[in-house]
Image (cartoon, rainbow, N blue to C red; front, side):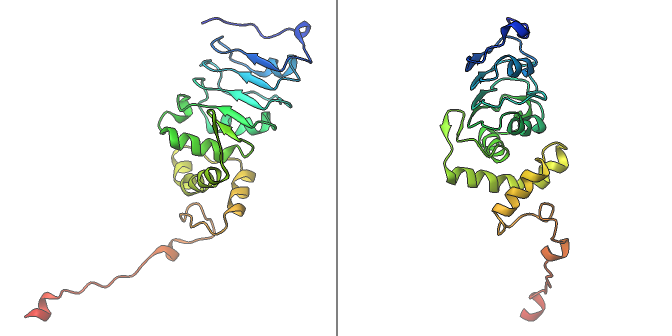
Length: 198
């Protein structure tokens, strides 16, 4: 794979709005935010060493492509919302390590639930109905997955936003902290009908 060096201070461009660094061996996107402050589109597909966006903010970025990268944690996905506050279009395949055990529809739902500003994911429009279904699906599985995958739970403020948005959603006991196991138990009495027949 071709490798690129981080841009130097002399490379700073306030007018460049699109950068395509696909298949370049990019491991750190941070220098791009500094060098190209007006960047609106970043195509960084197929960079397996790119595991997150680092501690920078792409103030103007609206389109980001991270298919076939090395994104291996849900925290890195959550960090896209912080690093790209204007993002509305994302390409993020289930070919990233974080989604290796998920199907495409699960990956799509969990990414949508974590990134509230997305209007397009993998080239497809996100309807209000799809967003609502994705967020509800995410809430239903969050507790079970969080216990198996420590970084699966989103930032507390995002989780609280979703809980407030869907207050009537019937959540498993682990997800709805206010519920107790006793609220979900049922008492059954079984009697044999064989004695009655005799």
